[in-house]
Length: 442
Ligand code: SAH
Ligand code: SF4
Ligand code: F3S
Image (cartoon, rainbow, N blue to C red; front, side, top):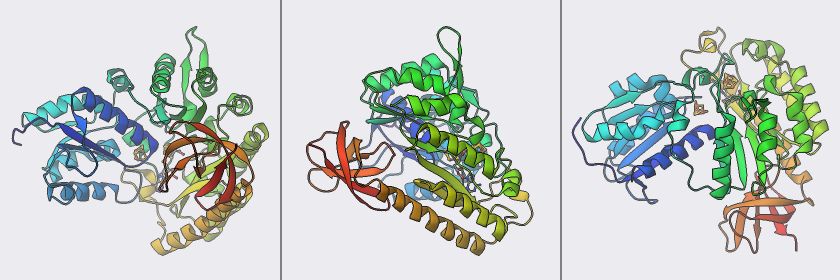
């Protein structure tokens, strides 16, 4: 690789989950600290960070096509310095280096605090790869939080020890670690000072978080939420994503007792059939999942529920798929994500027998999504007439229009006197599939 000028502008492109969005923000902060500024919309960047996801489909192929577009002048006029970060970097680092000479550096999700040094190497003409996985080291090395949108992410837990048989996350994000309590309280405070009204606590298994408070008492996520809720300037708390195995009574009680904890729970079930769940290495049954949700709903009756589903796991029969529809019919999700099973290299399910035909998966996905759309529409319609606070996140397309989120995480638009970051009392008057219209309550 040739020596090159130091990059002056950057662009970070994040794919995948909210944790990647969080990581993307932290990388941006680090680049800013190094004196590199964000490239304005529509202009070339000297450095492009592709913050990749490996969860499904041909995610890796997408990275190669993005790299090709960047170097062939399709995305911007001049080819930038390219860094590949995120979960594809972790899973296929060496391969990327071999296959894509235009890539200057590959950096895994646990090593991106080393990005500034790797940029210096690239300027000196040296390519580098760092996919080490030292638990927690990166957080201490990152710069302080500077500016925040009204709704901010805060990674509290990372990695996964659950090893669901279809999933790459335990391999790309490593073993479960919890960030220390004091670091989280501190980062939350900084985010609030920087303008956050809402914080979403993030983790691949967020409710597996454990820590100790200043006096050495053991805490779970419920304790952390209660502590964060004491900050008068923080108005809303959310968390995602949870695994049914880690939900304890204290957390359920917290939903009933802490008003700032928003009435929304994303709790993936994946399948409604116990044989499939077992083959997936999920530790719950359909029944235990439904009972758990009942307890949450008893604590917080207006709780909006969300989930994740996989159709076409190897060996899934028609009858087994029907069980998933039955769970949907019982839960009536406010909103949910559903995917066709995608074999991930290196995971146990990828080599299981009876992989399902694509057409069968398509058909199942369509049926499932029709049921989920039906319930989402019904949930939104049932909100009509309710008055709630909307956290204003951005301007809408129309003059004087604002977009924000209801407590139940619905997108709400309204017109009138507001600012980004305001919590505005709004009456919900019209419901669509993906958003609601509201009017300001005088
Ligand atoms: N930690 C979370 C979510 C992890 S990934 C949890 O355990 O619930 C987000 C979602 O992607 C998963 O919930 C699952 O529904 C889906 N997913 C993961 N691996 C997949 C695969 N190989 N094929 C299809 N969907 C997958
Ligand atoms: Fe993947 Fe399962 Fe871990 Fe979720 S709990 S990240 S689906 S292995
Ligand atoms: Fe994707 Fe990695 Fe998140 S695989 S979903 S970016 S943890």
